[in-house]
Structures are given as structure tokens and as C-alpha cells.
Length: 602
Ligand SMILES: Cc1ncc(C[n+]2csc(CCOP(=O)(O)OP(=O)(O)O)c2C)c(N)n1
Ligand SMILES: [Mg+2]
Image 1 (tube, rainbow, N blue to C red):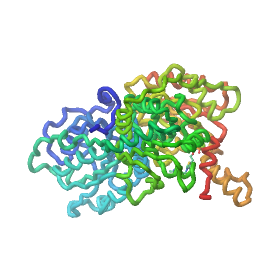
Image 2 (image 1 turned 60 degrees about the vertical axis):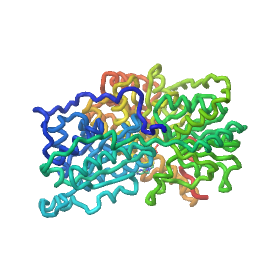
Image 3 (image 1 turned 90 degrees about the vertical axis):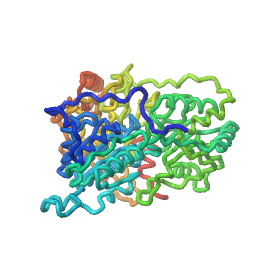
């Protein structure tokens, strides 16, 4: 059976010595409960732990610094709990692995909730560590320990985590952490939460614990599709006249990418990809239909409408997509769905989406299904390989800018480089940028929680730090401003990163909604900007970057200044720094995006 835990190729992502090195030798013996927790994080190969400090885990903090010497895991100090989780999220999006994030008892967790929701909806592994107590009321300090103790803290996030626990002893803590990481990284992946009792952390150990056999506690939990179903699905795909692959969630591995391409070529399927998710198929391939989009564009919709067999590879919202294209009667096409997502569905959040009509459910990780289908279709010859579609870079004309010029300018300034797009703004158009490798784009925030872009970009840039890739996060101004102080962590820990702000000086998404309201109600559309525009005063985004030790460029308002600003920023990143370029763009979305954003249930 296939190991469904994903990782980027090659050795583990290297961990460099941190800029925060403790004095003195690490304590050689585990003496306190929190020493056991820290040792377990190292045994579980957790490279980093993001955190905002808090007294509820001062025991663990001391163990990380003075027992482990702030190595494996290394602390990444953040300025908001939302960033702490978003950074772990970005790391997971590149590596497929869980980083730890520690948040203070109840209040830190409350700050973190939206980011945890994003991780959950994005099906990414993160090991969230919290604290409480002391649970034993007799040991609590007056006031503060009482307000920071809650009976069931995990309840705050139980609706959007895979598992949570509050272990009561060091031995139980070890087991809980091992189980947590194992569950988080097993497909379908997701965030988990371990709540450490402050009393347990700070208590001296009464007896040594036996050695921990992590490998046996966290066996590879592979999944494989039913062989009969695979044969039936392969036969349906082989016989199909107009097969379409809805290529949804997939790993960042390039061997998995190549197998998806081989499968599409072998059955001659058109392939549709999703801009919410990391790249899974070359968007300049002749078989790729339309452009990657958050909602299907006209070309992709028309292609799907013609399909006689649809293969969904863990497509997000298969039911909703089918309904949007075919109406409630569903398509005449045969639908094959490769997914384990149903195993995660709970009752609190509806991120499970509409129930899709499915003729064959291949209940396994989608990349495992691709491999099995390819094996079953081995006898079938592939059509000759087609040349990729040309993807020329558009011109950047003088004068005011739109998102298209921003993209063309960036492509020009970085021509010849391997670029990883770590985040994209809502105004993005999938036509602007080809994805030719799984790390060309790592997908969006998952849960639609604005403010995640900077943090996700920082975490992903950390995972890419020792690669050849130029890490670029492009954020809307609303998104950037909510998450702006995440970049301090990148500056402080020397994580090279370019952030480009697609600054339309508005929460423009919601202007589209107000316009829709005005039109339906026959009221003045001209008022749609009120309570939406982020202007008067304009925010000096470059100054926000400079205030945190990053290089700030802009505001760039004209095409003639764009490439020089990007070139300067890329040079700063190549020198190991963090750069932020503020680009003023005209508001506007793609037609498919505008239509879908403002759609009502009519
Ligand atoms: C935490 C959160 N608050 C509010 C919203 C509602 N919302 C959706 S998009 C959006 C605007 C985002 O602004 P920006 O990042 O500048 O992108 P733009 O729409 O201007 O392209 C808002 C406020 C949300 N999704 N998440
Ligand atoms: Mg905006």
C-alpha cells in the first residue's frame, strides 16, 4: 500500500542554526514534564515551532530553549497567533509535513482560530500545541491562572481539527503528541490540537520513562483503491470519447505530477484545475481546459459539459461544480471520484460541500488512485506528446496598472527564474501565469479567511529557503494589511521572501457584493465604495515593510516604474532579505469571479 504522507523530494528540508542561540549547554537529563514534551517533538522530527509566548506554556518554552538548545524544533517567534498557524500552514503546503505552533492558554487559541480553520479547509497537517491550568485548582495562581483555564478548550476548535487531547501525565503527553502528528499527516490530512496542562509541564518527573519507539507508534497509514473498482474505472476511462479530469488536491511531488500527466495523455482527457489549490497539472499543456480558476471559467465549463466520463481527483466541491454546470438533474456522464475526504466530514462546518452524484468512489488518496489507474491502463498506448501551448509574457504599457500588468511586469523582471507563487489575490486571473511544476503555485488559504496570505507566504518561503526557487507571495491590500506583521518573522529569521501587494485600496470583493445589492434593490450603485475603500489616508505599505526591517518599494502607480521596482526587490531577496512591493492597481475581477462572487441563490 502506498504511503500517503507527502513530502518534497530529497532529504528533509534542512534546518539552519537559528539567530537565537541560548547560552550554556542543553540540560542533559529530562527532569520536568515539559522536557518530555520537548523531547517528543524532537523524536517526531518537528523542525520548527512557531509561537507567541505565554505563561501557560512557560515550562515547555524553557524546555525548548534550555533542554533542547533551541534546535529541532527551533522557535519561530511571531507577532500574532494567526500568523503562527499560517506560517505552519505555508510550511505544510510545501513539505506535506506538520510543523508545530504553540499558542497561549485560551486567548492565544482564540486568536488562532481563523488560521486553524484555513488549515482545516485546506486539508493540511499542523500540530497545534496549547496549554491550560494548572488543571488542579489548588495549584492555580490567583486571577490569571483562573481566567486562562477552561474546562474544554479543545471545544473551541474541535469542529475543524482532526483530533485533540489534553494529556494528564508526561507518559500520556508523549503518546498524545505521537498520535497527533501521525493523525495530522495521514491522508486526509488536517490540523490537530494537544493541550498541555501547565501543572504537568512544570512538575518534576517522578520516574524516568522508557525509550520512545516513534516509528512503531506512527506506522505509514497508506490507502489503496479497490482493485475491481480500479479496473471498472479504467475501462470506463479507456472507452470514453470525451473524458475530463477535474484535478483537485494533489501532492507537491514531481513524480505524482508526471503520473497525472501520463494518465491524461494515455486516455486523452481534458484536464481542469483549481486556483484554490496547489498546481497539479501543467496549465500550458494542450489538454488543460480553460485557465485555473476559483470558479470554472467559460472554457472549462464548456469542456465539462461535453464530458462523457468525469474523473474527479479529490476536486473541492464536486457536487457544487456539477450543479453549477449541469443543474440539479446532474450530468449524463459517468462520474468517478477519487477521494478520502468523506472520512473527515463532521457536523460543525459545511466545508464538506454539496453531496456529489458519484458512480464509482475510489476511496483512496487521489495520487494513489492515479498510479493504480495508470497500471490498469498500461496496455493502452499514449497519444503522441503535444507541444505545450505558448504562454507569452504580455507588455507592460506606460500608465495606470491592472492585475494583468502586475503579472506581466513580475514575469519580465524574474524571467528565467524558477518562481514559486505562495499566494494569489482574489483579483488574479489564471490566464496570466503558467504553472509547469508542483511548486510553481502552492494554492490559497483554504477557508477563505482573509489575512492569511503573508503568514502562509512566510512559512512556505522557509520551506523553500534552501532551494533555487524565488518565493513570491502576491496579496490583496486587505489581506496584506490584516497579516502584515507576519513578515517581521521572515526578516528576523533571515527567510528570503518577496511580497507583492496588489493594492486596489479596497476590500473590493465586497464592493462587488454592494453593487449587486444596489442593482437588485434599484439603489445607487455609486455608493458601493462606502465602508469598503481603504483610502484617505492611503496606507504607506512600503513603510510598514521598512518598519519591520524589510525593504519597501512603491507605491508603484505607473507601468513605466514597475519593472525597476520588481528588479530591485528581487535583488534584495537574492541578497537574503525580505522585500515588499506596493503596486497600485485598478479594481477589477475576471468575469467568472465577479459573476460567482455576487451570485445569489437564484
Ligand atoms: C477574516 C475575513 N473577514 C472578512 C472577509 C470577507 N471578505 C472576503 S474578500 C474580502 C476583501 C479582501 O480584500 P483584498 O485582500 O484587498 O482583495 P480585493 O477583494 O480587494 O481584491 C473580504 C473583506 C473574509 N473572507 N475573511
Ligand atoms: Mg483590495
